Image 1 (cartoon, helix red, strand yellow):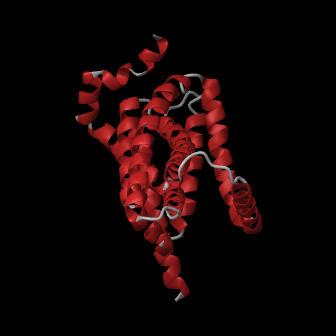
Image 2 (cartoon, one colour):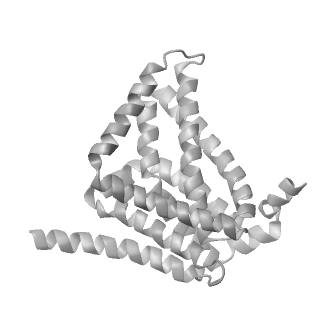
Image 3 (cartoon, helix red, strand yellow):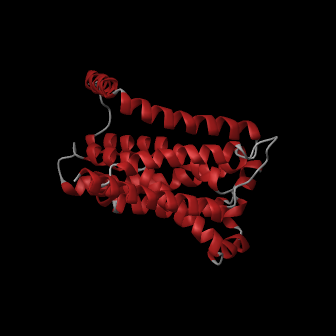
Length: 252
């Protein structure tokens, strides 16, 4: 019964009506969609690479469709559990520390690219050494896609729950974000090739989310207003784009 209570907000018509008619909630949803798209580019690249082992375009598309539905199902499950866990300040503390770890790992990898290459080569050798397979190539690819979705979902949901405590807002933002990420992955990748600072900016935003999460803990107990944080997120994106073109103009 306790598990069922975790998912009651998803089936509360009044909650859905409030979210769908609230300008503040929609601003937060758009913020979550933006974060989902920016933070899931790596996921999109990995998924695209995983499907390349399949022999036909039809199988590639079908494997991504299975992966999409699996991502939706897992996102629904993990948001319900996360909504409950995030109420404990100890979980928030661990979540904030983990988000800071993600930021640290990103900047560390940027400064030590040779170690990243070594880790990737080690993983490739490990995969090649496992020659016994009991499933077809198609279903192994689907399982691989689902596994990556689970890993990336945990990060995204944790960041989203740190931004909004309404599970419906997080669910809508996450679902639309997943769809946008799959549909416009190539566009985002091209945009990041043009403006590479956007990737670094995404991890700066993760650091800001971690700070937002940690200052909400005792003894500070300070909650940053949703609208203010959305303005910070979109403002940071705008400043990053301006910074890129100003620096480019100076170099010329």
